[in-house]
Length: 544
Image (tube, rainbow, N blue to C red; front, side, top):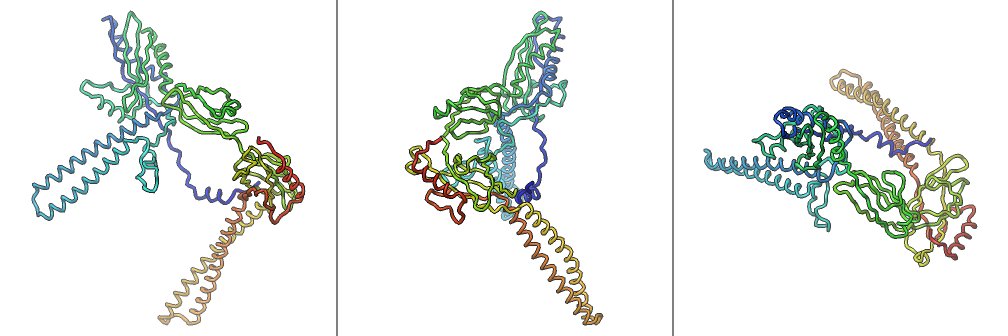
């Protein structure tokens, strides 16, 4: 079993593990429904139904999944916070201006008034700057703008999000005060819409179910709205009819219709336009790793999805995106043809097997690889193996390659196949031993140093023999020398341990041009490789 690299060890030791943050909640509440009855005798029953029906709807929705957040919803939350901040800053600004005006009538020296006036001007300027920054953020609620950079042609780039929320994030559905029996107080007659919104936001409510019912001969016509806060956006309006004798059935029907809007899981159609046409014919589309589809139209749920597009002979494409805000997306994908590089692998000093991207190499003298980087492994007969990275970039194309033909490019892998795990284990042991030796030597050094100083001071007051002073000085020199040597040895072993750890990193091998020699190491089957190379240059090899 291979030991972890030193980079992984250092990362594990020095990384501070973050605390698991509590999941974001999306709080839903309801207000008593408005009601109207055509019968005086049923007025009390209708009034009771207007109180009971929203509670039953909340009970049906309680604890059922998570809501997918959209960009517009996050923007409204950010804009609300910024608006509240601006109002507070404006009140502060008005107060500071009033304080400055009062200085004109205040008693005191002219110098003192001038000094206070400058202080107020500074405070007013600071508040003005905060209001300007607030307005700048409000112009782009999802991200703050960077300062203009004269050296860059791109200005006002987003550098950070104003909110911790991101489009496509999910928030756990929760009920106001964790009780379906607890309705939110409706808007009072003397309460403005803004005041009601502020009251809802202060109670951390994200959505409120409102509605009205009309009674006709024992039946109820219910109209239900889902209103999002802040912003008071009506997400949906539903209508249904039920019996007053069975409010539970009516509530279940309403909740079932409301549920997709509450969790924001409305269906979304993805329409793919893949170029070129040859790639579109063989393309296979994976959404969240599900069974691949050849269709250019796929229906998914509203939210963030991982899309992977594969077409044989073309470079694959993958991306993650939050499909929200609309019910249809057109995705245009350009898939370049794969550039194939043919290489030959050869070991300079041992026999063994080659692996490329964890797959065994059948013919090491003729291996086709995609453009890019390939992780390889050479497993020697001695049971040792070593990883390497092939930098298989085709580079500048020759005239033959520009016409669609690729040439044979041999490389030589020079493997040392050292027992790196054993060497790292030995260097680790040496590191621990050197550290232990350093720690053991330090008490003797400190003690001898203290005794040397004490004896020297005692000698100055004629309380110690000169021979004792000399002895403790010699002891101190000796132990200090030992500690210094131990320290140097420890630092050497630290460097050696880091070096051995880094030796586990794969060596990078670049594919040499066709006219370049193999270097200092000639492969055992060099003649075979040269023959293949010559033949492949003379003949035209079709690109895969």
